[in-house]
Length: 519
Image (cartoon, rainbow, N blue to C red; front, side):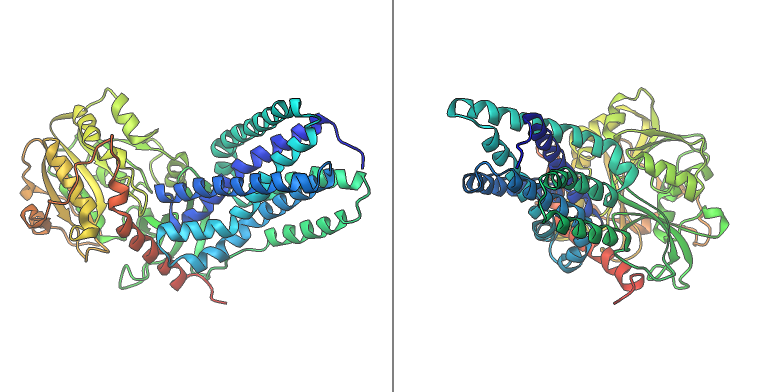
């Protein structure tokens, strides 16, 4: 076999390094619809990436002795890595359907062990094998190793930026995995052909099979589930779907849903130009805000499908919106009839709060989504930052999960305790329903508010005459184990782990129950 040049080996090292980071990012994002995008998911992805590479380094070192000087062995290792990367998006869903009933942590770990670890093991083998092929004597070993790992790491850096900022947001997960896997396979395959390796034909057959697999839909839905939009990006998987409101309204009204990682973010009726929410709890937010006069200035952190913006518009408020994911803004305009002139700033909420020079009468935190807790917003330092942009008598409103009792309610009690520590007089409004299905709305101001003068009425729902009927008496809450949340010690995600698990499990069951076609 004709020996390739050093530049070619360095190119393969660069390609392998980029593939490692692409595999990690794609693997973590594949988990999102089933297990979310919490710290636990990313910790599992990072740990198993390092674990796969560690095993690969060890095996690569061992095999480089057994197959010393064998370029064909290197090519076959790269081909195996590429094939496993190609098939990863199509095996992952089958695997996660089996692990979905595990906890968030264990479900993510076991899933990644099966579909992400194997390609990473083969990728990890590449660097030791290339180093062995490049090393001519002991004196050059360090230089060869340094060059290979530097070039591989450079490939990983570039791939991380390109995948995270452009490829995944624009092309999703399946196509990039297939393309990168094919590239990882293509060059070694060409080298084998040049050297007349007869087994290369087997790879072509396998690639053809995987290409066919990539064209086959991995999951089929009932005809009631009409997907209008789907993409992958910074928040994970985003879909817009028209479907009946099973388990939400008694008449199973048709609605349009914004779904992020298999969790309903916005749900509006298809009638009346998509202006009104199907959820009854959505009526409570604008009702509480209605104690402020027309023309009040509002900063809304988190856009969703824009339902709350429309409600604030009906109250005559002037609203600025901060949304971290540009896709959400585009979707809310294209599919939920949000006024395109709405002032939407694409930024992280805490970052914008710290840099804006505007003052507001109300700041609304509507950024929580199932297992994903942006805990940097609700720390004592975060509330101090928010206080600086409030007008005198201004109010903070925080949309939160409905659990307030026992271990599942520790997170909500900690938010309450942190608000109180920050100097806010805080009320907790609980929307109707049990703790698992309701929302909590924290209403915090340095001045005690009178909520007896609310004036708002949402179409299709009864007007809320006495908001105080839905307030939780803080004296009934045990704050002994509640924490003061701080930037220096992030702990909200940990406090909410078990509750997040229940939310994610319930949403996955809901969609599989009504919309996925059973085999």
